[in-house]
Length: 194
Image (cartoon, rainbow, N blue to C red; front, side, top):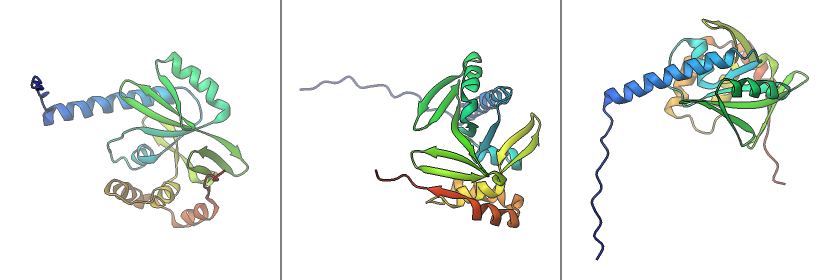
């Protein structure tokens, strides 16, 4: 007969605990973002963080995604290590952490009128018109334009409620002429089966 000692259930976090955790994580994320900006490396942010910087509407973030030129990676990684960040390579990108802050760093290269990002899901050819510089409290920040963010989010296989909310945030910033130009130039090549 198996006589297991009953295990105590850990206490469930209260709403106050959850809100405090979110607040602390957000503070860490903001601090790490400011540190990364101070590297002076040419970074281009995308995703919900870029959408928030553009719209001013806060949202919760699992991570912050950005692109960096392959030629800048060595210098940038040295900066990160010297500032206490941890770096781990994963699926063609770098996971960068400090405390509870998580960044997805996607290397890319310039090729004519495009920034080219390669990953396990294929190769993206981003038209250079798909990136803009905005002014924030921290100074100028390079982000994916609302038009390119719209194309990337709208093109996803599932339009879940979070994706829909992000699209709604971008609507007021879209320039339909620019959306057409970027849409015509944007290219994606899926990985080959070989």
